[in-house]
Length: 112
Length: 113
Image (cartoon, rainbow over all chains, first blue to last red; front, side):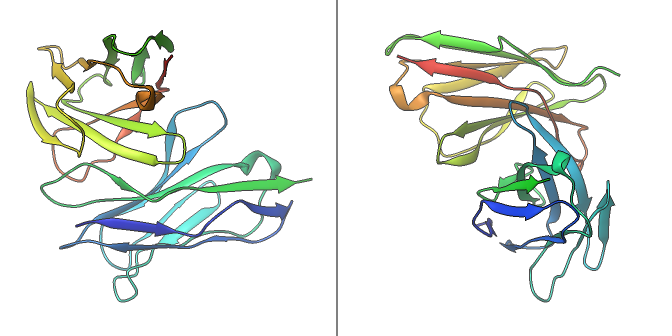
């Protein structure tokens, strides 16, 4: 079956530091990959997506590249801000099933 | 454009009661999904409705059920509530075609006492 593995949190960084949150997946076929973000007290917001191998999703300075050879979709940002503090979820959706399979989430805390 | 809306925001029930949660998708979206976000268990897929039909179901007991109405809004019913049903229930919607991203509502916080 499908599964998503994310690095354990919390991740604590200083403002302007470089961010990487690792995500690897197991799926049949060619899934679509997503990063969602959940700010405190809110629902999930789609951050970025990639639907095929070598696609790069990007939004708000965040990037992730769909690597089929390593089954990975790592999230990166060159310079984090305090406002980026949130929980980040990696997820996949495969043909036919449509339901999103989520990783366990990684809490990011950015300190001024 | 209005996003996905859910009601109520909070719901408090006692064990054994029934809970009904409601979701209105983004206009034009025909698919509605329900997820449970329980503390320590992450986000788990519950149900997927499309065009009024249940299309897929996660690994939850039958006391979790729902329906989708002709206007594509949806209702999640949880019967015989148990303490471990306490969670944030998130609804999402998407266009009917495959691989479209799901847009989430703010959730309903269900507390079972």
